[in-house]
Length: 172
Image (spheres, rainbow, N blue to C red):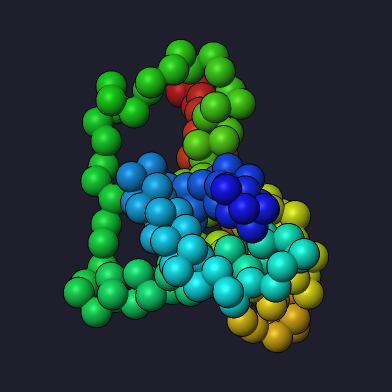
C-alpha cells in the first residue's frame, strides 16, 4: 500500500466521528464515510502528495453530506421515530454524563445542518476557522456567523431541556 492510501486510512476514525455527529445514525454515517473514501480513492490524483489528506477528505465528505440533505429535502423531510420511555433508557439513569451527551447530540440534531457542520468542524474536529471555512466552501465570516448562531441555538435548546427536567414541588 502506498503512503497516500495509508494516510487516508489513518483519517477514517475522524471521518466516522464527524459523520456520526452529523447524521446521528450509525449506518448512514458509515455509508457516508464509505462513499467519501470511494470518491477519494477514485480522485486520488487530486490530492497534493505531502499534505495531510484531512481537509481534502472532510471537503469530500461535506459535499456528499450536502448532496444527501438536498435529496432528502426534495423527497420530503425525514423525521426521527420517537422511542418509548423503556427503550430510550439503555443505561442506568445515574450516569449523568451519558444523559448530558445524549442531550447535546439531540440538540445538535435540532439545529440546521449548516450550523451543525460548522460547529462540529471547529469544536470537535479541531479545524481552524479558516480551514473549516475552506472545507465547507463558505467565507470565514459566514462560518463565524453560523457558529455563533448555532451556539446560541444550542444554548437555548439545552436550557429549555434543563428547565423541562426540573421538577417543581408546589405546596398546597
